[in-house]
Image (cartoon, rainbow, N blue to C red):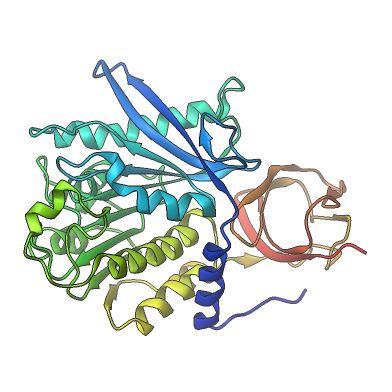
Length: 376
């Protein structure tokens, strides 16, 4: 079998091009999940891949990673349209928390809300009455801005059911996100504006990153970046940085979008080249400084699957035995998930021509391969 290799810079260009050629429209639903333990309804605004844009439209065919997003202090979920408009068309289901929007929020409840939403969607994924039935890939990440970033760390502490946690200028909370960081072991990304005038990096983002116990974590400092530049223009957040004259919002959002694309693509979509792209993007961008304790390309090294045949495939392919099979297209979209049987061919006759990532789990051993599909 021939394996495809890309330079880091070329990988970055390819992944950026995938976003420019976004595949999906954006659907929207308003949902609420009930937490009986706290007698609390947790509201979310959900944006998801759809074939037709609009409210309450069907989810596109396939399964997608779930990203639960927490807003900043006194900021509504609607202040982050730039983020869902960028990520959802590339194949993510995003649930924006609408709780704790008052002047006196409960950070502890906010962190628990992340968990309620993640659990609620797992239930929805198994219910054939749900619009999200079998549309979730089973891979989840928590992302938050400011207060929402700190709450994401509270939710990630001791939680190995998610794949990653990301903070955009994550703020210290009560209970303490800094203290909770020592119990966060999943891959973690902190994006910090060096000129943040609301949550100074040395008192907030830095300690949260430093104390995180993740085997793979990254801290990206945006040179002259702000606190509010992650949100849309004209939000109440901007009042806290009224005289800010550092990095412009468009530049900060462009950098943030690309970092999220690469990081989430790597950890939520199994896009191995996204690790190279993340590191190359930071290295080549004069506006970013990267600190990390891992090499993403090394994290991606998995045992390969040499027994896949025929290669290239045309109408079917065979696997070495029975196991769990997952297949992803070139955009990272999960197009197949199910059990393979010994000696039973997998039908790929209806798949578009292209290169696919095949993940095969047999007796707890995960193997991967690139499979070109060419129809004769």
